[in-house]
Amino acid sequence: MSDVQHSLPASSSVERNRLRARLGAAVAGHDQPLPTPTLVVDLDAFDANADDLVRRAGGTPIRVASKSLRVPALVTRALAREGFAGTLAYTLAEALWLVDQDVSDDVVVAYPSVDRAALGALVASPRAASRITIMVDDVAHLDVVDSLRASTAVPVQVAIDIDAGLRWAGQQVGPRRSPLFDVGAIIGLARAVVQRPGFHLVGVMTYEGQVAGVPDAVPDQRAKSAIVRRIKERSISQLVSRRAAIAEALDGLAGRDGFDGLRFWNAGGSGSIESSAADPVVTEVTAGSGLLGPTLFDHYTSFRPTPAAFFGLPVTRKPTPETVTVHGGGLIASGPTGADRAPTPWAPAGLRLTALEGAGEVQTPLTGANAATLAIGDLVWFRHAKSGELFEHGTHAHLVQGSELVETVATYRGHGLAF
Image (cartoon, rainbow, N blue to C red):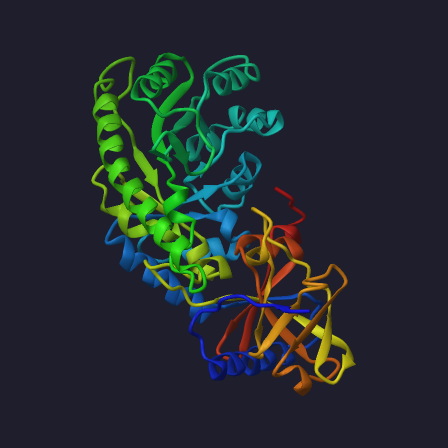
């Protein structure tokens, strides 16, 4: 029976063992025992990653992807740094909460919404409507909004989501998002928005997930990685031409029906900051996962974030001298089922999941070089495959600098929220 092993970044065993000592000292210094999973964010790593994202953006503003954080205090921390501006939310209900709590005064909702309660709240609040932009890719989205209001006294800001996938050899490569690809269809919807009372067209989104969200330098997948890099190159080239053509067509609408041009053109993600920002049409890029460095971002040619988010689980038993079992652990990431969606035992170094049990809901056995050194009650620190999803599993995140726990803050779940 083989054990489950991931290809890991070049963090040395010494560095990871030092991390274990540092995180252990931080949580041990708390005045009360912390519940598990113990969710921790290393602020020094978070800030270093933020600085690197700003460097990579080269002066293009970065919109913070709240889906990749889900901790309001971390969204606020990122927005306080030069180079970051505005938030990209993943639901309208979340956007309304962020505005109401003064976390952000410029929120774009990344996905179309048919949440009638949230849309009703939006059209009833001039303050929220002036700070939130909803996403559409179909006239039907406008119809839902109109069905909820008696008048157009409160205008709704709208952005159009345009498919940014690659068309190659008769295939579509990229996320299945918007139905809008051809310039004619895009302009048709844009015209419908600007001509419709009570709506303002203010932005465009072109998220190239096949560039931003796919590893392209996985050590044990060299052939696949080479193909991914080629797809990325073709995508970037095709998008530059497509965006320019779409922008020119949208410029042709300016001055008509009260439309005076777009306020923003959003693109990219943590894995495509440089190429997205280099496109002259793009006015802002988005990043979130790059701030926390989950394992799905370990193998990119474009950047190498420092791991900043961890969860600690206690050893509860030792089935054999070379095996330990920790409590819980089955924090599996969304996406296609595979080993890369499982959490990775990180500190101490030299631990791995077993193939038979993997990461379990109530227990996770671990084997490897350092298993014999662990005692019942010791914490093992894991990394999640996706950054924001980790914080759905606890009410609080503990913020650490060095070996000191400096603050404990509520996650969305800790605020009683489930978006």
